[in-house]
Image (cartoon, rainbow, N blue to C red; front, side, top):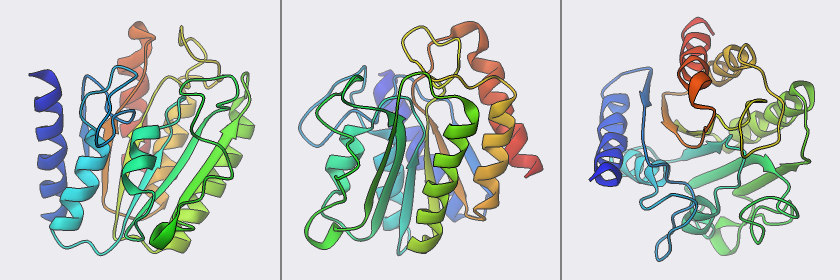
Length: 217
């Protein structure tokens, strides 16, 4: 029931954005970006971000960019759009040589067929600090701009937080204000879909900081 409600929220968010909202945040649980067309994994059953992207396409967006900032690579999202030219997938995540899902998320995975060049992976080593992480975000943002998307879907994983119990990046709570501002600077109507984030005491603050940063960006 929760997975279905999360997917429904993603579709509703897409409708609100197409109706003129600047951005919509979905507090979705369970997350979704490890779910593909015929597989589940990593606590994910339905791919909320992919559903939002498809809903935006169905509502008239010619091109949609999915920017995944979760600590773990969104293998489901990549698989769903890997051969498509209408949806860009750009992801910043832990190096799959050491991090889940291990078999997916390498830098040489760039799409295939019509989708060649529409998939961008930016794997980073465990222990990455904010400066290097935001440099990767700048690179991913440049890819989104070149793609010429009409709308943005953000797989907003907050397990990049230094205090996350299962992840190994070193972002601090104040860094999420900057993240929100950087997302706003892309200038695209945006659907923000909550993915991972397991430091439960700080999760609400970190999510609110992204929203506050976006609104001030």
